[in-house]
Amino acid sequence: MFRSDCHIHTVFSPDGNQTPEQMLKAAAEARLTEITVTEHCECNGNAALPDGETPWPDLDVKSYTETFEKLKEISPIKINIGIELGQATQGKEYAAKMTAAYNWDFILGSLHNMRNELDFYYIDYKGKDLKKLFSEYFSQLYETVSFGGFSSLSHLYYPVRYIYRAGMSVDMSLFDEQIYAVLELCAKKDIGLEINTSALNDKYGDFVPGLKYAAMFKDLGGKIVTVGSDAHRTDKVGLGIDKAYEMIKQAGFFEVATFEKQIPVFHKI
Ligand SMILES: [Zn+2]
Ligand SMILES: [Zn+2]
Image 1: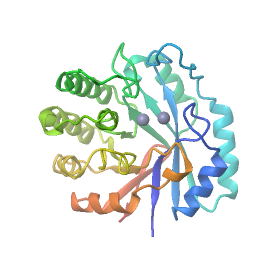
Image 2: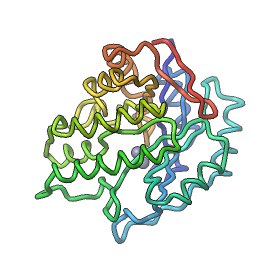
Image 3: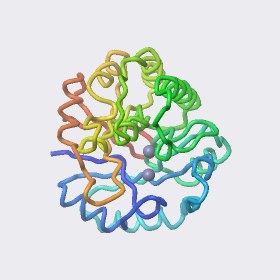
């Protein structure tokens, strides 16, 4: 049975913990038939890191792609080579440079921080106006999708996992109108929607996005859905893939997508 994880980080990402070989072994153990590696390319450099954090070096494209090209020759699991392009609108030249640096199979579009703000990972949410924060987040996410240049939109409401980790909660339906606009634009531009499984075993405990927004995407004419664990460690590879496929089916999709040279390939689920 086809099972694919389209969002994986290895040590080629500064926050990745394990080698390509270790992640591939984990993929085999998780009975995946295909993986897509998506190492970080943060287009705004280190602007969203707090003082004192070790700066992130740029992705070493040559070493990254050569390593995986070699692994492709011996791996029983199909490997696609991609990047996670963060904050493209905050570093448009860098985004263009990284996009052109290799014939990527897949480019995930992400927004990990708002302009002149820390990465959501580092924000202290106590006392924050979450409604204002999400409203601003979705408006900058809309800009990111308008700018485009990627295959699938990653973790639609990224800050949620950190807000729940901080012991707080937020009603996402407050932002339905903005989410609708983002999903409508993705559908119109043939950009995929990622179902990110990373918060499944976390305090948040659901997919990002969940069924409601996957179904909204379908209603809006969305055709491309990708599923990724966002694994930075071996124990997360393939997390919740089967459950995610079930959820997508409930939302009305009968196929999941992977990408080769940025062209979607559809697989019956
Ligand atoms: Zn990461
Ligand atoms: Zn991300």
